[in-house]
Image 1 (tube, helix red, strand yellow):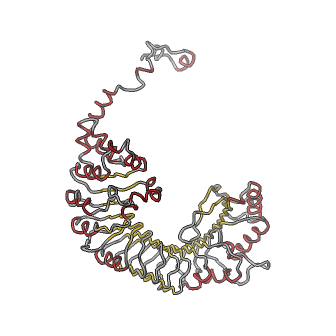
Image 2 (cartoon, one colour):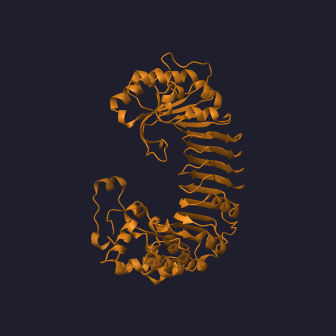
Image 3 (spheres, one colour):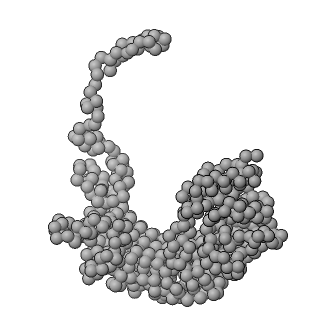
Length: 499
């Protein structure tokens, strides 16, 4: 395209309407032809095509790309990861007389996909969330084995081909078919995969018979797995260099013990009621532990700095000095007993408390107890139930202990009367003389616009030096008898009160 007035001065250009030699049809430039698109794709450098294919999360999509051109087919052979999940839609089609003959069995699809790659360093196979959520409706399928993915015979059909370079493996089984079959897949993996670093197994009954030491493994995740105490002990023995251990809903344990000298991070959700829980991990830094009512809880974790504990009750809490603890979250219906049983928290800087709502005077927590136990906290978060346990008497809080190190507070409140909430805030500020930021989250059921507006005006006018935040929260879903925590619905941008 050419412009006839391009040589005119700027002043003239403002008055002169440019003319063009010939208009170009929008349809002629809207999109390239399929042939041109194919040519351009094939002309891409090999490493760019490989990078594109690696970004595809499903190996079925990679397989489709292989049929488009020879160049993509060649590049796809260098993709080193396989990811295949069976969806609810695919499962239902495999059970329908009309569509079942048209679909290859999922296990054969998995095996052929893995074997078609030159080398593989990561494999993720299983069922997706939609199918997992509907598993209770499919009990009639328990006698079949077409979705039993931890069948040692099935895994042995493809694992020897890829085991040499395999570094990460994830298998999420179909619980209906796997829960009553004891799988020997651990023994097979430990004998073949000498380079395996990350292992994730879900929804199965595992055997440790024949388990061999696997010193390369540094990360292990077991979700909804059936194990016995001796099985967990053998896993710790055979995987001695684990740095990350995640146990969620591992059933069958009565007196489980974790002994791992190199463990750094652990998440453990205990679904049953064991007699004793014990963790011996001298290098453990981060621990999230959810349990119900163990008779005894033993922790020997001197390097622990981030501890999230949700527990209903423990008769015997044996926690040795946590000299490195910086962040602590406690969630328990018996929060007072848990705080009094907790060892000195002088190193704690970030504290989060949550519990159930209670008007029982015996369960109230005095600020003196809280501030003496955790004297150096700079950030305090009070969950939906914890604020009620700290609620002062009509005469205010008694005691002379001040929290001079505290800089910020987040309080989740159920506010029905503004004056009562304001009295609570004033009582806190009397104890926390160096506080600089206060966040108030009001329960969603009581968060009407007038209440929030009045609360905002009173707080910013009464304490103008503070930075205030206001928002709304809702309680999260409960589980295993715990409070479930809370979720922030929305939160206003921080601002300082008008002076």
